[in-house]
Length: 205
Length: 321
Image (cartoon, rainbow over all chains, first blue to last red; front, side, top):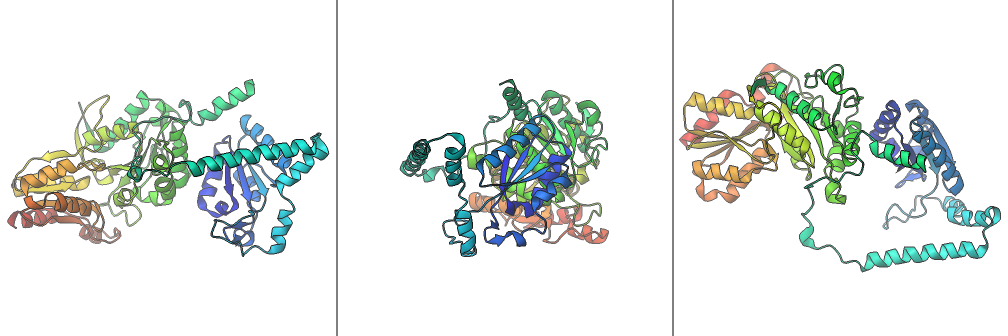
């Protein structure tokens, strides 16, 4: 599974990757996070046809989901991943969502209309799923709050650890440009073998 | 040993590595049944199959990007750019992804990009370039440029076994023009080691690729004591060999077919000026193409690319300095 923003779909490399994946029926799930803006550039200045429509022209399915609906995203991912594991090739999932902060810390998002920000704030995926866990999946409000507190504690701990970590030694700035040896991520026996190994294990389990 | 052309030596090196290591595979345009535009992979598909001699669409970023993915997974991809010029279309994956991967996250990308380069055949501005300086400005890429059949095989094998992305510049003008004895079977030439192609005391010509042959021919014709250093690797650069020869002769000409500004010649000249200034008897000179695209018209191309007479003149000027 590989994730990218809708901004990248305007770049030629995106086309090259989709085309290559289609030609070789590669086991890839392309996850497109369309958050409405490439930095400040809105969708209508990014493409004339929604990128999910292009999937068919590369020979594989594209599906549009509400990116702020946890179960919709999960279900689309599950189907696409199964399809890939079965050797039926790639799929493109477009998740419609919104970036709720600037492109960077410097960016006040002045280009996003207030009404649009509010519309998406009301569709917060975490809040929506917290409500759904209680309404449809038998969780108590306390359990949901407990999960929320655990996650917050974990994130805070990670942030504290990062802040407490020493800055790198300036003497290391020129180290590591070249590798001295190779530790492969996969098992190295065939193209895309890592996937085959992983898929085989998952099927066995 | 067997006598081979430079082209046959490239094929032989690639074939040997593919036989030795099943993780080595090739990908590029028209390299399969067609055997490549220059026939480097002629017959490979019959021996190794279509999965290891992978024909790609005309999509250089996809070629390089696929190679990066395969390399980090444990394979040893060898990409063929049909012409070195076409790397411009795959530049992002090469200089921004492959080159920086180890520095950014400690992941090695052992891959080779074969780059048929050089002019002299009226290929025009899109099929004749010597783009090595692009890669030398991109930390994380190794760059080699063999001049002989022996080195064409040995440097390719070493590049394939190197844990880093290596740009392998193969000069098209040398493909069938250069022949030589090449070791059969396994043959490796270390990256980063220059070769003294000819010994001499009066002048050093530092060259690589096609310019090595111009320098050797000029030295023979002039009958002077000219030392010719064949760099073989442009990154890593064999600074010791360069400085040793500069100190020995006191006069240095750097020669290459690539354009002049900010090229290898500039780098070598700066190195010699900084480290061997006291040993110099003359300013360091360069013989290169001027800063123009390679023209299509034969007389214009000949005027742009360094010729034997240009080399003789440049050597003669420095010898008489």
